[in-house]
Image (cartoon, rainbow over the protein chains, first blue to last red):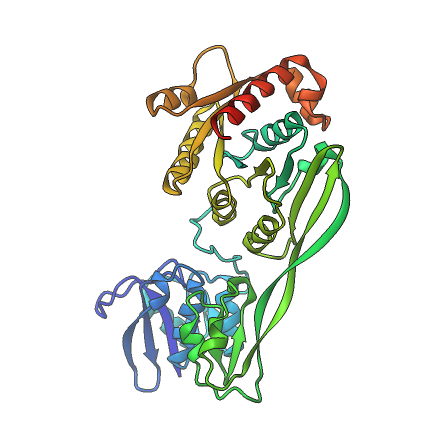
Length: 123
Length: 277
C-alpha cells in the first residue's frame, strides 16, 4: 500500500512536510511493501484554479491509499474521499517519522477541514 | 453614453454617487452591477415589470457512453473534473462553463444542462429606468449576470453602471461595457490605496476616467494629492458630514432632499455631458 505526503523539495535525503496540500511543490510517495519511496511533482501547485483538485488527482493516480498532511481544502478532500483515500494529521514535519507513526496506528484522521483558499492567502 | 462607477474599496460611495447622478439626469438608466450585494433598490424602491433568470451551462456526463479516456479531465484548466474509482467526478464550484470538456469528448458522452445562478430585475422608479442583478448565494461568479444585464441595455441612453467593489472579474466585465469611468475615491489611506488600483484598471482597459472625491475634508488628502500628481480630472468633491450619512442610512436620495447636494451633482452631471457628448 502507498502513502503520500506533500513535501517542500525533491531531495529524498532531506524530506520535510509542506504546510499546504494543493500548493505543495512535490509529493513523497512511499510504498510499504517494497519499503521504497519516490518523489513526484505536484502540477497542481502552479494551477491558477482548483490546485487542490489537481493535487488530489495526482495522488489518486499514484494509487496511494493514505495521505498525511497538515491540512487539505474541501474540494481536494472530496476527490480523496471519492477515491477511498484516508487523510491523517502529522506528528512531526518529517514524512518518515509520520509513516512510522501511521504504521504504529498513532496518527489521527483529520475530520476538520478548511473551506479551501481558492488562491487566497491565509486569513 | 455608459458610465461605470467604481472605487476599489467597498464603502467608498459608489452607490451614493451612482444613485444621485442617475436621479439628477432625470431620464437615466440606473444599473446595479454589484450582483453579490445589490443595494441600489433601497434608494429607488423601483417597480419591477420583468424578471429574467440567468443560467449557465454545466456538463453532465453520461456514464453509459463514457469510455474513461479522461481527456475531459486533462483538458479542464479549471480542474473542475477529476477521475477516480473508474468514474468522472464534477466539482461545480470550479467550472467556468467553457464547454471545452464537451468538445474534447470523443464519445459525445458530455451534454450541457442549464443551471440557474441568479436573476435580473428590470423596472423603473418615476422617470428613472432601473436594472439590478442578483447572484444566488451558492453561486460563484457573477460575470454571466453582468453579461445578461449588458445585453438588456437599450442604445442611446444615459446609463449609470454601479459596479461591485474591488477590481475582480465582475468589475472588469462591467467596465468593458462602459464609455467612461467615474472612480470614487474615499479620502483616507485605505481609500487612496484602492483608488490607485481602480485607476490602474481603467488605464489597463484604456477607458477614459475622472475622479469624484468622497468624504472630503477641509484639508487636501491622499486621493486629492494622487489626482494632482497624475493629472486625473477631479469631477467633484463630496463633503464628509453627519447630515449626509443620516440621509443615506434612511435610504433617501440626497439630491432630492438638499439644495447643497443638488448643486454638487448638477455641476458633475453638466460637466460629464459637456465633456462626453
